[in-house]
Image (tube, rainbow, N blue to C red):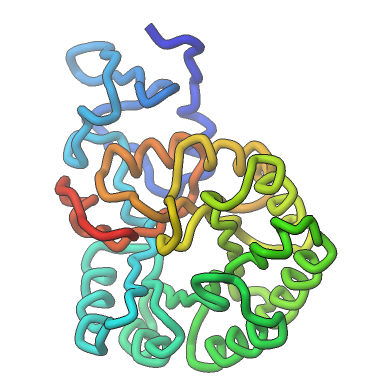
Amino acid sequence: MLDPLLDLTAEIRARVPALPRPGITQLLGCTGGFGLFRDATGLHHRSFAQITSAEGPWDLSPLIDHTLLKADATGAQVETLCGEALAHGFASVCVNPLWVPLAASLLKSSPVRTCTVVGFPLGASATRAKAFEAEVALAGGAQEVDMVLAIGAAKAGDWGAVRRDLEALRSAVPAPAVLKVILETCLLDDAEKVRACELAADAGLDFVKTSTGFSTGGATEADVALMRQTVGSGLGVKASGGIRTYPVALQMVCAGATRLGLSASVAVVQGGAGAGPY
């Protein structure tokens, strides 16, 4: 028995571009890792872990940033990444700044966007350095930038420094380019997560994001829900780090994620399980 039953279908449809698949399972509500589903045979209360990508209520491909951020990534691997993104209709590829020109050239004139990271993975670069890195990335063809929060400043309670960092990056990454901030939620307490989200909204960012995938933990359903509750419908929420299966990805979307950062993207949409920290 779902207690309480959260009827999220209309809300999720409103914020997720991937439409429910006709004739397959329909999600009526979800809470605590369980969902109330309806299919041709009736209503079923099932764990998300029992739902496969083939029968799941959404094709999550349009929400995925197909990600390759490991230090030893090669040009050939970036070419493969871009080919997979084009084949599956992912939202973007996310690569380190070195590979932005290559990815942008391979994705030119396609709907798949080029995303990169700055101040990655520690967030401890000087603000001017982050801004310059972002400007170089945009000049090379990046359309989306995932910056890392000034985590040390946040932990020290220096929210003025955090605000200046966010505002400087928004100036360096003007619309229509998309700017996301990675909170590294595993290192923050809930009050710090909320404050970081509030400052991101105040600074005009487009997304808040959970994790780099290179720290002590990744995305959790609770963190995604807290971030969504804080930013409301004004910002996107990107869940990243440790999402390696379709059921986990679906849980993140139900919790409030509108973008998913995955390196195991192909495995997730094809019903398998990926490996690695991201």
